[in-house]
Length: 213
Image (tube, rainbow, N blue to C red; front, side, top):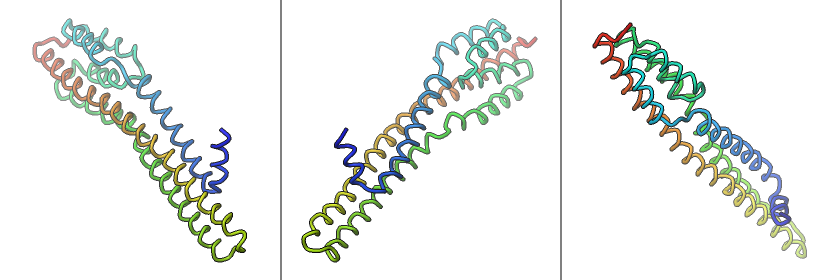
């Protein structure tokens, strides 16, 4: 810990904005992790297996109640929109599913792309600190007294190296987290697309067969 604190101090003032980007990055990662794994996600296969059985049994009300049992998950919200129009005809069913997807998909994708921006900003701040540190180092060679040049040069190089390292330390985890969270997001959206089509086909078949009440 002492070495980390020393490196932070040696990095100079540019370490503070990089630290701020790290706080923003961690906040986004934690919020998105909780949302994607515990709020928006659901066991899609098991959920849709139950929904399909209820629809084929012509028990739409119970299917809607099953959707209400997971009020924050994305797939049940989309499925509920289609079920609520189950007796309204093919166009109504398709429009309800599409409208729900257009409303909910941006919520799932929200903030994850920002991690890429945070990583870029941290890297650029580290690079800027590097340039400033090198400028300080070369300026010291010109203006400092001979007996102080070594210390001044070391100080400038320390700023350059520590800011570069800190910027990368912040940027790399943000980029890795972004890739991971994007994969989880795509899985949720893929389930929504796949099962929306399946539900639409199921409800349309039911409607054509005269299953509407």
